[in-house]
View 1 (cartoon, rainbow, N blue to C red):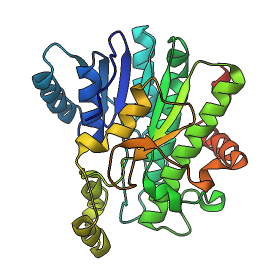
View 2 (view 1 turned 180 degrees about the horizontal axis):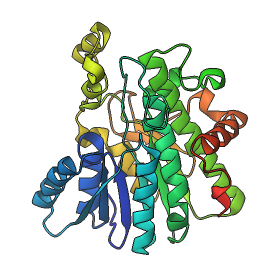
View 3 (view 1 turned 60 degrees about the vertical axis):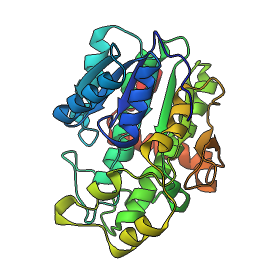
Length: 304
C-alpha cells in the first residue's frame, strides 16, 4: 500500500469526500497529518465520513463543509467561506463526480449535469480558490479523470448535449475536459511562474457507488453492459483505487502536467500513464478554458 508522505501543516480540500476514492483519499491525507476539509454535497454523510476518519486516526483535523459542484452558487459560497478563514490552501483535490446519468438532466444553472458536476464545478472551484493556493509555498491541484476520457471528444457545437445525449458520451467528454483543464492549468502555472503543480489521475476500475448512483438517477438503473462489465472486468477497492490521486496530490515525485493511474490500466499499483492524444491539443484546451470561463462567469479571474 502506498505510504502518503508527511502532510503536517498543510490544509487540503477533498471534494466528494464522503464515499469511495474521496473518503479514502481524505482519510489517508488526514492520517498523514494534513488538516482536511471534506467538501460534500450532503453534510450528514460528510459527518459520517468524518467519524470514520477520526475512528481510524484519533486527533486528526477534519472539517465538513457543504459543496454542490452542480450549483455555481454553492461553489461560490464554499470558496468565499474558505477565503474568509484567511488561511492559504496547500492542495485542492478535485475528486467528486457523477457518472452515466441515464437521461439528460439540467442543473439550476442550465448546464448538463455531468458536464457541470465533473468539469464546470471543479473548474470554477479551482479558479475561485486560486488566490489561496498561490499564497501557499508549494500548492497543488490534483484532478480525478477517468480511463473513459480516452474515448472522449469535446463537442463545442453541442457542449451541453442538447441536440444529442448519450450517458457515456457525456461522461467521457466531461472527464476529457478535466484532463484538458489539468494541462492548461499546468501551462498557465509555467507561463506565470507560479509554484503550482497541476496533476491528473484516474482510478482504473475501482468499485465505488459512482457505478450505481449516476445510472440510478431519475429512476434509472445500470444497463446490461454495465452489469456485465462489473462482473467480469478486473477491479479493485477504494484503498488501491485512490492511490493514483494520492500520489498526484501528495508525492514529492509528482510532476506538473503528468497523469497517474494503475499499472495495468484497470488495476495495479500507481505509475505515470500516457495522456490520451485528445487531451494534448493545446488549442482545444485553451478554447475549452475560455468557454468554461464564459459559462461560469469567471472571465479574467485567472489574473486576479
